[in-house]
Structure formats: C-alpha cells, structure tokens
Image 1 (cartoon, rainbow over the protein chains, first blue to last red):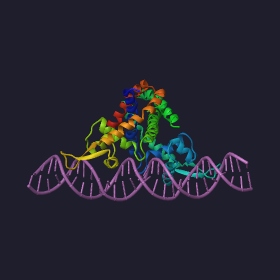
Image 2 (image 1 turned 90 degrees about the horizontal axis):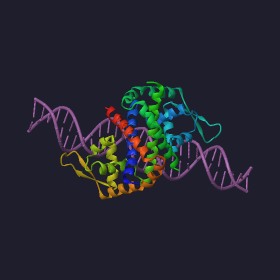
Image 3 (image 1 turned 30 degrees about the vertical axis):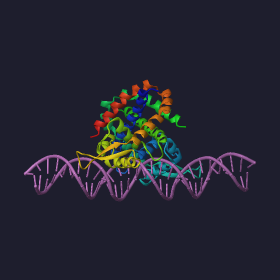
Length: 148
Length: 148
DNA sequence: ATTATATAGTACGATATCGTATTATATGCA
DNA sequence: TGCATATAATACGATATCGTACTATATAAT
C-alpha cells in the first residue's frame, strides 16, 4: 500500500477520533454534573433496542469489559434510573430495567439537544448526513467483523 | 426540526462513537502494554505538526484539559520518548521535544498498522475514504467553531 | 448423580481523565 | 517601579475504564 493511501486511512481515524471527542465534550456539558456519555448511552439503549437485558448483554452491545458495565450500571442504579430484577432463566444473572425517572431523564436530554442540531444543520445539512451514514456503517461493520 | 432529522444526526454521532471505540481498541492492541492512544497521538503530533511545543499548546491542540496533558507527557517522559527543555521566551513554561526513542517508537507503530489497513482497504476502498473525508472535516470544523 | 468446565457478575487494584486549588512567572496599568 | 491580574504548569482528589482474580450458578460429560 502506498504511503498516501496509508495516510488517508490514518487521517480518517484521526478525524473520527477528534469528532468523537468534541461531540462527547459538548454532549456531556448538556448532562447534569456527574453523568457521562456512557451512562446516558445505556439508558438510550434500554429504550431504543431492548429493556430487560442482562449486564453481560449490555457489555457486549457496547463492546466494553463486563467490569466497566458493572460500574456504569451501579451509577445509574444509585441515581434511580434503572433497577435490577432477578433473571428467571439464570440464577447467576440479573435483568436491567429502566425506571420512569430514567425514561424522563433520557427524554429531557434528547430534547435539550434540539438547538445544537439546529445549528449543526446549517453547516452539515441532512442530505450530507444521509451521504455519510452508509459509508460509516460499512466502516463500522468491517471493524466489528475484523476484530475476531 | 422533524424527529427523523434529529434521529439521523443522533445516529451519525452514534456511529462515529462506535467506530472510535472499535478503532481505538484495535489500535491499542498494537501498542506495548501500558501505552494508550492519547500518548501515541502526542508523539505523532510532535512529528507531523510541530516539535518543541509547550504542554499548553498541546492541550489546546487536542482539546483536553491541561491536567490531562500533564499526565500524558509525564508518561512519555518516564518512557524516554519525549524530553522537556526550558522555554527561553516564558519562564513559566516548557518545550516538549520528541527523542530518537520516541521517533523510533512512533515509526514502528505506524509500520505495524499496514496489514490492518490492507484488510480494511478491501471493505472500504480508498475512493470511499476520499469521499468521506471532506464531509467529516466539515463536521469537525463546525464542532470546533461552535463550541465557544 | 457426580464431577469438570463454562459463564455471569463483582471485588479489587491500576491507570486515565478531569475539576479545583495552588505556585510561579508574565503582563498590564497606575 | 509597584501592584493587580492573567497565565502555564502542577498537586491533589474524584470518577471512569479496564485487567485479574474470585464467587456463584449453569451446563456438559460420563
């Protein structure tokens, strides 16, 4: 592979890393102090994908170590945003359910993003997003499959 | 803004977050134990952008708190990959210079990525990267300017 | 049924990141 | 000059992330 192509791939991941960092910083400024993106993401996952999953399921879904998920869930439980219930199918396990307080929190955070997306829409119109998404999905799927 | 557009922007940042996490995990597996992306990125910045910057310059360039940069630099200095020199123009400050060992380390890590990029090139050809980069740059520039 | 192996979750320790407060030096202004 | 304010870097403490080891339960093999 020629150096110029290497450099393009390098730059691709560099841009993605910078965007992730900037957007996460901006997003966390919208959260109450003491909450981070990881915790919000769990709530969002419970709403959008499936409620009542096990901690292990969630750790796999986010590709983080089990111990990291244990910690995130402990924070959310202390804040009253999720609750644990026994898993009737596996005594080693638990089921994670979002509470009304968690649902409210998640909805409020999302609503608070509207002005940010409004401003963004001027610089990056929806059609540009629609163009980006398929390529990014292809990239994610490769990384997901390649990491045996 | 209609919900569908909100959801597209939401998904955009979600994909970027996932890709960042996957690529960082893969990349850090290429680093010797105990090193993380943040530390490599500093070395790369010293080579590609400018050597002899101050810690504060670097913190601004990476948009991280000064204290985070202090820590990353301490790790790199302990590993002999950078050295501090006095700043002749400001007695409060230091200049960060990469050492031969740091340069060698950075080059070896980059070389070790070639096979990964080779495989990636099958799923995401260079032309697709070339298509992605301008849109991502526009997105980054917006975030960078919007965050005051 | 018994035993060996696999799996879900957590306790614990290490490092990374970040916020606040502190120190030392620079800069601006009377 | 002298003094107030601003800035670069760090010390310190808190939380996040992650790896290793451990416990409890489930599954598989016989």
